[in-house]
Amino acid sequence: MNVDESIKPLIHALAAQGWGPREFAANHLGYAAALHLGADSGPVHASFERYWRTVARISALLRGAGIFHVIIKTRRNYPYSDTNVDVYIQDGDWPAVREILSRDKWRMPSRAVRFKQRLIERAKIKLPPRAPDFVPAHVYHAVSWRYQRDVTFLDPQMVEEVPLVSEAPQLEGEVGSQTVPMPTRPADLLLHSAEIVFENYRIALGEVLYMSWLLQNVSPLDQRRVYRLGIERGAGKALRCIVRQARAIEGKDGAEVGVDWPKNFSVRELVGAWWERLAEQARQGRGLSGIEEFVGYASWASMYRVKRALFK
Image 1 (tube, rainbow, N blue to C red):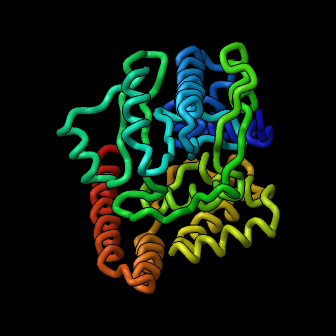
Image 2: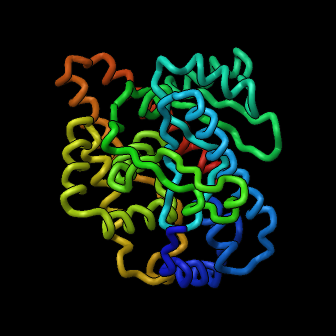
């Protein structure tokens, strides 16, 4: 497993400042914290294994059917799991993917739920699991967030085969030598930046730590390539927002990083990034789509800001 041991003192410092399982989980550090703090982590371990078992199962099923897919937003530089698995497929393969997953461990949501999902995110379908040993499968028909059209952040050069045991050695007996197609580390710089700014509107400490690690471990040449790709897709400012956050914590200890996480982006940062995306859409002759995207960002960001203020 790719583990950044420098995270250990940070986790201990945050725990000493009052962080518990809830705060670590909200910042994508739940499993790493359980490992480093030696807490009663039975449920956290089980959740970790469910996540990676789901990654393994979905990829094996789709690979067996000869379907191109990429498991996205999966790796970090520390032990990590999520509450669902995000899988990108090509739009034309959706009927086959739906049939494969529905025959196995997942089920299609009702028509009403699918309609609601499409109102929120046009290119994603969430399939609940049938069995407790798996987590939901979120199937993306396009690399996009909220109301975006496909921004084509992925191409064959941005995908690599990752051995599952490098991320979840506990499952070696189940997965053996299985590999899974995932975005390359340079691709993660852009994919995570776009998701955070265009969909989440705030950044968790775990995301900042990973972005900081990537900036130190991705070559300058690859970083320049990713930055050019971001500009071409209208995500240059989104990438710069994340880079600023990552640079701000470099070299800081637990006390200096602070406990006020996740952090919301300012209205100025968000609108600037959205406006760049709109301008790029207009340059490509897709002004109406750009306006639709912009309104979608603003609407959901406003809703989430109120929701998070009330239910923090």
